[in-house]
Each structure stands twice: as structure tokens, then as C-alpha cells.
Amino acid sequence: MKFDKKILSLATAGLLFSAGTVQAGELTANAAAQSNYVWRGLTQTVNEAAVSGGVDYAADSGFYVGTWASNVSYAADDVYSYEHDLYLGFGGEAGSISYDVGYLYYNYDKEAEFDFGEVYASIGIAGFTLGLNVLANTEADEAPGQDFGFGETIYVYADYGWEVREGLELGVHVGYHDGDFSEAFNGVPGSYIDYNISLSKGGFSFMISDTDLDDVGPDNLDNDDLKFVVGYSMDFDL
Image (cartoon, rainbow, N blue to C red; front, side, top):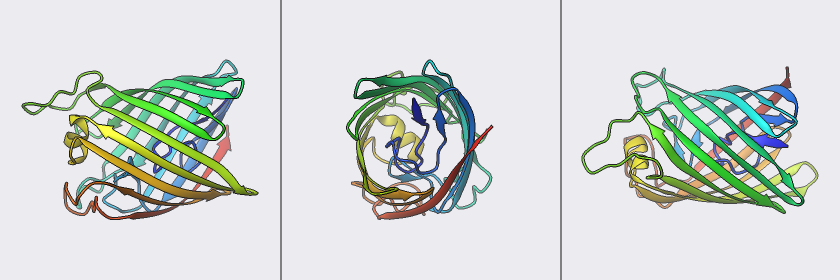
């Protein structure tokens, strides 16, 4: 079982960009740097650089657990914020079909007060991946008319990746986010579509990402503009 924990800019697209890759029965660490942290089409660093790293363990049975952290920023003067994730799940293969189910908890600094968790599931075959993330719990304060209960916000995505030449992978991604939590968390309407195309080779990655949003939300986010992201990631055996 190979698990690509959290593809920063590909929204769990299955292509290596900056998150940890775990081989069964191994303890590994990962480190990465990229010009922007884009999550589901939206910048998490006001379009500035991010540095991240994590530790993962996967058992031969298919069970895995890990942790990952990155700097984040949602305002120009918010330079010391962080995101720290904890996750566990189970993944494997049945013939030509791969599968992955688990729980992911997003933890932020005290000022953010927006910690939340998701349950997720994905299935893949012949380079295609279909996945679903569902809001499970949150500590966010709810405004009147908002509901952040279990299942009230979802993210559905489809990805396709293939090797266009030796060592060079091309990936395409489209995702749909629906629910009030996206508006409370990222300051955008409750429903939107994101999409991207990426190239990766030998730890280096390049991605072009966009959404169907107008320029809404806090300043400096440029939600209606194309985002070009370059990065480098590496893994270490522990």
C-alpha cells in the first residue's frame, strides 16, 4: 500500500507534490517547500511560500497513521500561523482497484479557532481516482443560519494521472466543495469548483490551479486568478 497523505495543491489528487509517501511497514518522514500552499483551489498562505513536513507510519495490514505541519497565513499580518494535521486510515488494493478510507484532523493556532475534522474515502483504477471528504466535526463558532454539523459540508473530487515519459507524471484534477463551512473558513461562497493540471518529476512539481470563483474573500487571495505553483519534496526513511 502506498499512501499520499495530503497533496497540498492537488487536494489529495494522488500525485506526489509535497506530502508524505508511506510504504507498508515503514516509518518515514517528509519535507517540502513550495511557492504557494493551495488547498482545494484556495491559497492558505496569501499566495506566499510554504514549508512543510511530516512523519508517517504504515503497517503491512494497510493501516496507517501520521502527522503533518505547514505554515499558513490568512491575512497579510498573520505571519506566525500554522496548520498541524493528524490522520489515520486504512488503504490497500483488491485486484486492479485501490481504496483508502480514514479520518483527518486539521489543527490551527489558538487565534484561528477553526480546528476541524473530516472523514474521507477514495477509490482508484487505471490512473483514475474518485474521492469524497465529509466534514465530521469542528470547533468553529457558527454564525446564525450556518450549520457545521456532520455531513453539512462535502468535497468531491476526480483525478487522473499518468506517466507521459519516463519519470515525468502529468495529472489533472477537478473538485467540488459544497457547504457553509467553506465560506466561514476561507471566506468564499458555500459552493465552488476548483481544477488544476500538474507536472512532477524527481521531487520537483509545477501546477496551474484555478476556481470558478469571482474575486471574493479577504484581500490578497486573488480567488479569480490562475495560480502557478512550483515545489520540491523529499522523503526519508526513519
